Every structure is written in C-alpha cells, then in structure tokens.
Length: 281
Ligand code: PXL
Image (cartoon, rainbow, N blue to C red; front, side, top):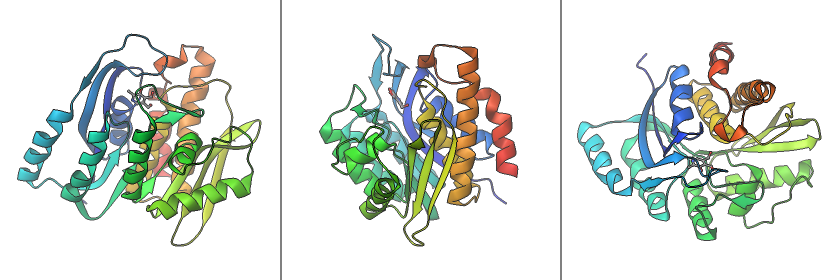
C-alpha cells in the first residue's frame, strides 16, 4: 500500500506545543506523511504569553502551492488549523481543489476561539470566514465556542443539555461538511469529551473521559491531529473520537501530575506510544 499523505496548513508556534509542532509528530506517529504549509511563524502561541513575534507567511503560500502543483503533488487529506488572516482563509479553496486525490478528505479545524472568546488576533469577520471554510470541508471539529460563533448563537458556557448539543451538531453539518465533531462537551462535572455526527446516517456518537482540572493549551490541536490521523487510517468516526479523547486526556493527566506551566502545552510526547497502540487495536 502506498503511504498516505496529509497536507496540514497551520502556523508554527515555535514554543508552546500547538498547531504544526503537535500536528507533525502526531500524524507521523500514525504512519502518515505530514506535508506542511506554514501560515505564520510566532515565537510562542498567543494564549497567555506577552510580546510574542508574528511573521505572516501569506506571500509564501502561492509560490509553495505553485511549486507543488508543478510536481503533481496529491494528498489523501488536507487539514487546516490556525490561520493568520482572512486572506489566508480565502487562499484555502484553491489549495483544497489542487491537491485532493479522488475521495480525499478536507478537514477544517476552525481554531480561533475557546471559553467564549476569540483568540487575541481575531475578530467577528474572521469568524465568518471560518464558517465559510467549514462549509467547504468534509469534516470539521470545532469546540463549543467556535461552533456557536460560526452559527451566530450565544456561547452557553456549561449550561446546556443533550438536545442542545445534538441541535448544534445538526446545524454544523447543515453548513456543508458531511461529518462534524464537537469537542469540550460535558453533561457532568467530572467528565468531558466529544460528540460526533454523520449527516448521511444521522448517527450521533459520544465519548467521555474524566475531566482534569485546569486549562491546558494546545489540546484542541492535539485532539484534531489525532482525530484526523485515526480517520485517514480508516477508523470510524466513533472510533476516532474515542482514540483522540483517550490520547489527549492521557497527555493532560500526565501534565497535571507534573504540575508544569500549562501555557507550555501538555506532555503528549510520552503518550505517543499509547496513541500508536490505540490505532493498532
Ligand atoms: O492552539 C491554537 C493556536 C494555534 N496557533 C496559535 C495560537 C493558538 C491559540 O491560541 O495562538 C498561534
């Protein structure tokens, strides 16, 4: 079997373990080639650090894409995460159509907000651009903040029930993607997990693990990278949300026990062995 290839398009936050610095090792651990298209280079991510640098790489995207096109490069999936600007959001449509093999998957993680708030670099207009990008995807994985922003609803905090979550899932697939995963779902104080919907079958799945106290940076990107890796390896959506939840919570638990500064991200590296096992079983 030829090795699968994912093109992932996100920033490089040099320190802080999110976006490309987690996507690359996780996709690689799953036996998939990770081709990368960096959107920006930051000294750290923007969550909780002051004075970070930001170099926009928009001008490099077109020449990189043109060179890849001249090589006839193709991918089994294209995965976008944190993008640096609205212009970059608009560049993605061309990239999706240029590099998708027949039957390839476009996965859009609308990485832009959490806990009811947009990340510092973004505004409401950018959020609408993300909604349009999600509309062009086959699979998306917002957290509840991102989902409600794209759907023009107020963020419910922790105040919601199963009917509310299933309504959000249905509205997400109504935007365009055939499948959607909602992260950060919780119906009980001691558990946290994800919900997933398949528009074609109408099936909804949930998976929960224990909730670990605290806010751990980069875990959305770890979750998405693991989810996509499992899907590209042929796992069902129900399996993929389980594998991604177990892997991510394992890394969070390890980091919580170590008591390190959560801005520097979680110790997913020591969970990669578990991730490979989860994929093999
Ligand atoms: O984890 C999402 C993310 C990715 N990249 C950058 C970020 C963030 C979240 O804050 O700042 C640069």
